[in-house]
Amino acid sequence: MKTSLENNAVPLRTRLKELRAAQNPSDTRRGALLIRGRLFTWLATNRQQLKDAGRAMPNHIAAFWPLEHEPDLQPLLEQWVEEDGLTVSLPVMAGAEKPLEFRIWTPDAPMNIGPYGTREPNGPIAPAPDVVLVPTLGFTRYGDRVGYGKGYYDRTLAALKAQNHHFVSIGVGWACGDLSDTDYSPAPHDVPLDSILTDKGWAVAAPVLLNR
Image 1 (cartoon, rainbow, N blue to C red):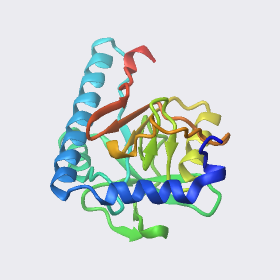
Image 2 (image 1 turned 90 degrees about the vertical axis):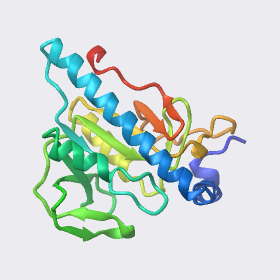
Image 3 (image 1 turned 45 degrees about the horizontal axis):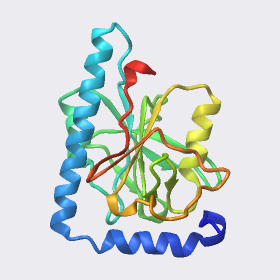
């Protein structure tokens, strides 16, 4: 039997969380730095290519505030806002079974504690994102993502697609979440990601925005 979220959800997520928590803190600090560096380079390179081609550049990044053991993106988010003039938003839970809302974040934005310990900005509703960075617990090399089981990001990505909004989704997680050597298969409602970035590099190739 293939492992799926229907038949093995709790053991799978428990194992992935244990692998993530067992990492050496110095390795995770270095890994988060590498993730931030690759994200910065990817976005800067793609923005320049689009600018040179006379096309619209991505200006709104929907990111996330890390829960325990997730890669810390905060220094990069600050740089994008303060030095690059980009709009950054963070997700806010609008209610059970609803898609996430994205609200504007700045380094001095007041933050609330949301459900499940998330940090949520008090800012205004953000425009539809050009890039969505998705916290990723487990993944396959086909862009399948294992999250925390509540379905918020699947509903959110599906809602954006239903609006015919063009955006890129990038999963951000640790290489220890790679499910390539398992028989995992996604659930029918799961929305695959365009790319996945880990501390070891791009597990699913970085998207080239000029070609989209």
